[in-house]
Length: 96
Length: 318
Image 1: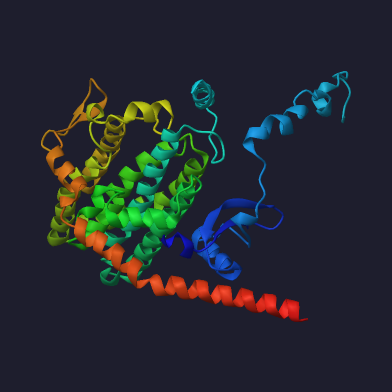
Image 2: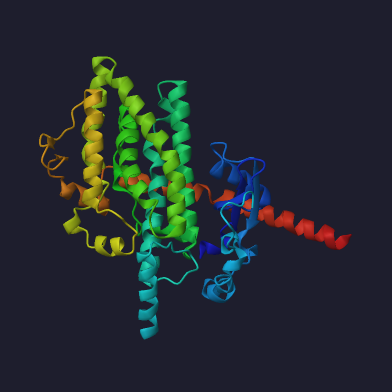
């Protein structure tokens, strides 16, 4: 199978301008980090979409399991008191 | 088995609620397979689509047109790469997809099996072929599979320049000499019907449509999209002073749409089956690129491995 010869997959993150965070934009194949950055430049920033690129090999990303979504995220669902709207204050009160 | 049915029900209700499906979520095997097929064929279309246009890069009539066409063809490469990446999230490798294209197992859009005989064809392709693709792709930005929808958003942003550059070429020719007008008309004559075929078979001959609509892979039927394209494009042809090669094409006040003539479905199926004017040429070109590039791919990988080994060695040495 030619599969074994396939170049590794990299995930690409782009900062669109200074002051904003890097955001995931997609992935690509490259032999090493340097080539991944060059390819990311060509594939994902042809129209000045970025000022900074991060690349990381996909295999190095650890992801949460969608099947464990419940136990990970549901505990937050019944804690409405973490939101400002939970607190009843008089409407005439300003700046709070 | 009941477990499977239960999962399918949950899956369908997520789709019905307008939720997006992400690669690691549970999905029916057929949903996965349908997406691998559709996304990879879409990717192949972008890549093979570079060939008919690439044919005119060295013969573009001005430096400006050459820059525009180069940028457009480079975009198509980019679009192919976004889509291959989206398909890979479903567990197929890039090499497997390439092999399926070269062996003929995977199809690509039939439109790219027509030759580009004159410069006006580049205008007609941008205007009509990219125009038809945009109609389809705008719909797909709302498709249910997250990576596919995201790739489509990116592609749609870039695609509108393609169509506008095509129309501008047509406009230039249509306002030019008689010979230039004739060239533009000839391109329209040859690309009109194949462009309509891009939307696929009639709804009654498209057995997958119902399931695709249910899974929100498609949000409109082939015939709905085709009608939308015709309604948008007919006035654009009028503006150019060119004639769409369909004597039955006529505005229907009552329907609020253009009526149009019968598509030659025999031609459509012939091209799908591999008997179009350029099917062989296109696959031969892709095969040659794949074979000629092999040593480059191997050398780049060997170089990266050697560099990594040297780094490790100097680390352990110090």
